[in-house]
Amino acid sequence: MTDAAAAVVSGSCEGTLLTPDEVSFLKKESPVGLTIFSRNIEQENQGRLTQLVEEIQSYRQVGLPAMIVSIDQEGGVSQGLSLLL
Image (cartoon, rainbow, N blue to C red; front, side, top):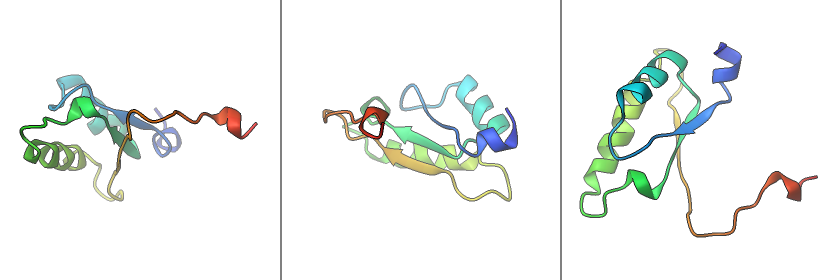
């Protein structure tokens, strides 16, 4: 992936721990952001979410600003680009 593409790519991870493939992707591509979903949060261990975000940020390439980490508001109506067209 080119630096320009990585500057606009955002992703997500599979669970509450990063997989080896996700770590490799974060190290190599350094995407601009990552979205957290309910599958990434253990209800009985909210501290794990903090650890996950810190781990995600630790793979950001030196010299780049912190990665944008957003949380998906699940259960709501999805608004697509069709509203803009």
